[in-house]
Image: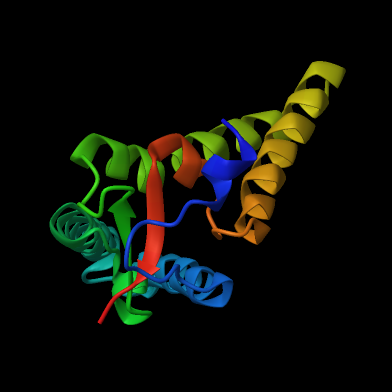
Length: 158
């Protein structure tokens, strides 16, 4: 990969702003936790929360697969596209949006509970990779490392 590859924009689209991408991620996080208050109601409790999470996950996956958006991206009028302008393959979208963050979260949690030097180094390395991925947003194309790996762009939509 060359510096020229980092500077290429998909044709006739405008990259999403850094702030709109951050806001979309925050909205997605808040939406994900929306069913938690149901745990405090004795009548519906865990089942209600589980059904709420399942409904939100289904909506997120459906939007992602059909439009290249999540609820947060839809709210911020941005979408994920391939370099050729199409919607990325379903597998890449699911890995990009769900599998990688989930795996990193699980591994960070495991490292957090391991006080050994190996666990602490592992924890540091995962944090460092996350930081590097996030800092790529400051490249001229505003693409994070996960965008480069998946050959995707996050762009403004109407």
